[in-house]
Image (cartoon, rainbow over all chains, first blue to last red; front, side, top):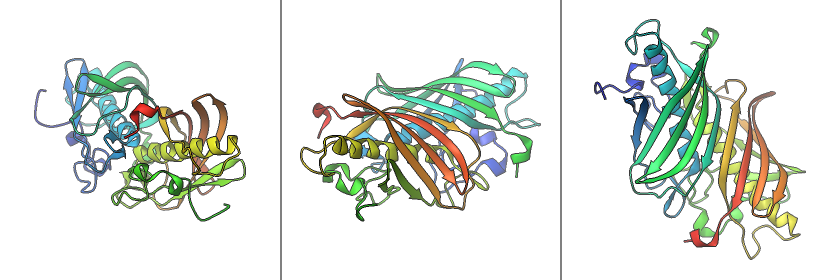
Length: 156
Length: 156
């Protein structure tokens, strides 16, 4: 991790309100993503109320963690692809085109979760990523995400 | 809708704590699903903080709505398949095997969202469903969900 700022800390202010990862959303999850070599990594400690049933994490939270972490990784990778510093102008922002999550094992509620993503392919405005969620040594979910660079007409 | 009880109201008490749809989770989303002919339907009004960026709903919430609604539908369909009253013993409970969400259009933050699901196939313990999320007349996401009947060893 090259600095203390997450990918999301480099988002334009107007995008820092995302429920999943916006530093400025006071109700949100505050997912924070960083490079770790060729992969990106985020850590998250679910709250006790993020359960599916007693002892296990809610699957919608798993999907949410993968979503924001992967989308942030797509943006970070776009800067890297251009040899630019993350957050430099013009800024990139991606949205989710598709999200495929395969739940491999129940995710225990308690341990810190580790979310990893890797860019598989950048094709113009689309970035394909694979991702995983782990609890300890167990990979509990794997995913494939297609991130799409946000069209300018959607920018507020 | 044949009664005022949602699918989730018929879950065993121990499963009513789900963050997405548990009636007893005070922090949760309280997704409530009902039959509407051959389809199931749920309605949900996102909070103002459930945003991805100003004016649009957070994609992780969309995935969460689809997840709980589809899993509840799989359980309801299992009773229907056996000609039994929903919630009768032995009770069914499903978990998510896989969740594929395709985001078709940005989901505006404001209007009530309508989530629909349909059982495509029941194969033993697996139920395949398709689902959608609409805002007004616009389908903003479609999905394919594989629900798996919960193995007994996971039951608390």
